[in-house]
Length: 365
Image (tube, rainbow, N blue to C red; front, top):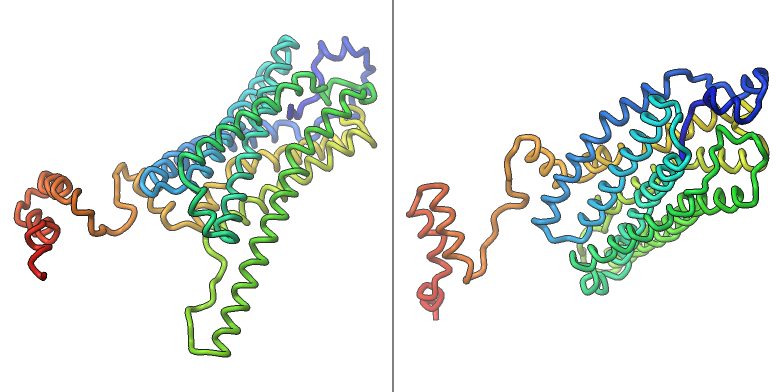
């Protein structure tokens, strides 16, 4: 799917190209892509695994659909790093120099596209969930819960993996010097539509509606303050919404160059014959793959619960996510006994459980 080196010696003989023709698409970056992708893989995979563990803790503790959607995005990023960066860039390209059976190349290409689509489209349910939460809060309370979130994630991932099957016939841009066929045109436009134009359109529409709704509410609150008694402070952009806007904006910026280069390659100049297009395609791929490793830093910058969860994972402890709250009556004896086992303080356990006993509850009446 995404590869940077030029054709191999065996590929040269198959295509019957002259040496002067091969120099036109020489990779001017040399070993820089190999170093870059190696660093990106060594940093991105551990960081995403840490993100997945922290999000799993948050999801199990809070029972919020938001963290399940973020967990799906992280899992898809890990698949993209393994299939695209590790298998596609490093193994096939740098180690084996693409000197592998064509059937294997095509199979890996389909898996790379599937992981790529899953990584991108996992963000769409998250955007929809945030839109419903902010613009239709009553409806969000009814339809947003973990069980439904898991079903939606399974549907999205299944469709994303299925969408990678047609790209088994994706033409290798580096080895094919012939003009694009009708099949190449269909696959390229399908690819850029799935990975960029369609999801970015959804992000743009929903994010615009979210920002518009928040601005309308803020103006209404300001009018109420001016015409009547002082009310609650104006509602500002929430951290969750800010994180969503950051994720979608970073994706739109990092994937835009690759989309442009692919379309340019289709209609204007071939990557195989023009070293400048070759260079642009290399750089655009490097930017696009950076998107699989930046979400962790966005989460840490915006979300305090996520930072706390990461700290607990790193320190190998299961710290409390929120301050302790009063427990329901039927759960008090069990939790009190557990507390006494860990603290060894029976008096404290009795004091915590006493206000919830039936006798003390009836005394005021």
